[in-house]
Amino acid sequence: MREIHISKIAEAVAELCIRSNYELGDDVYQALRDAMEVEDSPIARDVLAQLIENADIARRDSVPICQDTGYAVVLIELGQDVHIVGGLLSDAVNAGVAKGYTEGYLRKSIVAHPLERKNTGDNTPAVIYTDIVAGDRLRIMLAPKGGGSENMSAVRMMKPSDGIEGVKRFVVETVKAAGPNPCPPLIIGVGIGGTMDKAAVLAKKALFRRVGEHNANPSDASLEKELLSLVNETGIGPGGFGGRTTALAVNVETYPCHIASLPVAINIQCHAARHKEIVI
Image (cartoon, rainbow, N blue to C red; front, side, top):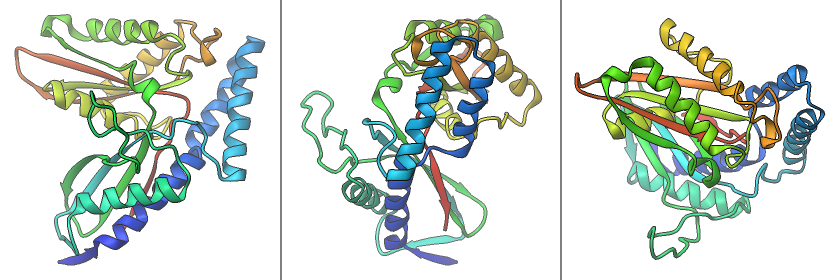
């Protein structure tokens, strides 16, 4: 059994918080550059150019890409041959979030109670999902999730008879209703199956996939490509000013579900699609 002390986890999470807010991933960065090649609209091209320049400035000057430095969403793959020592895994993650958001001068956006609205002061607690996997390693993935794009997300309990066409309509309707509010071009996570809550988690996890990496299931991968095409046909475009690039990617994750159900969740991510990871 391999031991990992919580202090090492906290330090790693703190670093992920800072780096993810300062450094846009190379996959998203390249997708923005590629989008400029297909845009005819001068306004759309100008918006994309400004997003690229903004990402360059953030990385060069070590400042956040966006003023909304997000809710720390943390995905953990914990090897079953790992023993966490020195305390609780969740406490280590939250200690790292508090340290990273404080030392990185990142905006603290979390309120302790959704109705009382008092800020916790250190951006904790994080939203943490943990999967037990084979091996003796700990993989930590972190994404600062902005509130504006999160607000445009949706869950619907569809009937099985709605089928794949119903799923497509739901995705396009959700994107159209969101319009410019979630700061396109978007990354769209779609979770299909499981239960209501499982579908939402699938949609969230889909946002962590690199742009251009499709689902291993050929039919799901085909659906991703078709949904991206349908979303981009809406013409909402970069910044909502019109254009061919409303989304950079649509990522679909699926899971078995009840014969009477077809849960579908859509989690929308803005152009600042930040996520970093580390394996300990």
